[in-house]
Image (cartoon, rainbow, N blue to C red; front, top):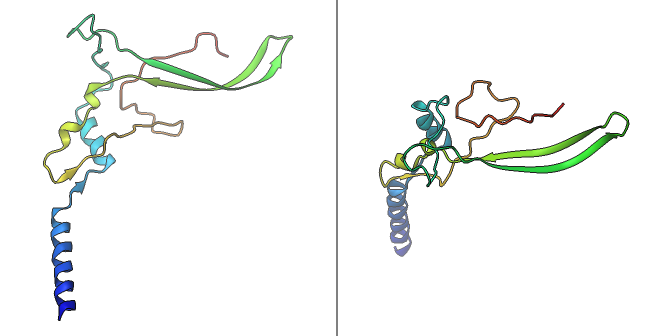
Amino acid sequence: MWYHRLTTLLLIISIIHSVRSKRKLKEQEIIQRILKDYDWRVRPRGMNATWPDTGGPVLVTVNIYLRSISKIDDVNMEYSAQFTFREEWTDQRLAYERYEESGDTEVPPFVVLATSENADQSQQIWMPDTFFQNEK
């Protein structure tokens, strides 16, 4: 008798939990919502205290990690180098906390927008125009 009551109680608790559980917003859904009205050709507003509300320059943090140097040629003064280059900036147009529509939707704390050499060539987000002047 007590076994049936315990089973019924556990069943009711699991049903209530499943009804109240939050729906997780997938990264793909967030990215689609953000990029729907986003124009990559327009640079983001700069976050500069010196020029408030004027947009100002976009502050870009750059990180270069030298991984290796090889093929050093003293005669031709050439060498090969491999390094990792990272850029970081703030684009408020990509913020998505506003997409938490109700208390029943769970939103991840951040979404990583990554690109690779094999990615689609159509650019979707604004990126700084960075170049190396004397590279070969």
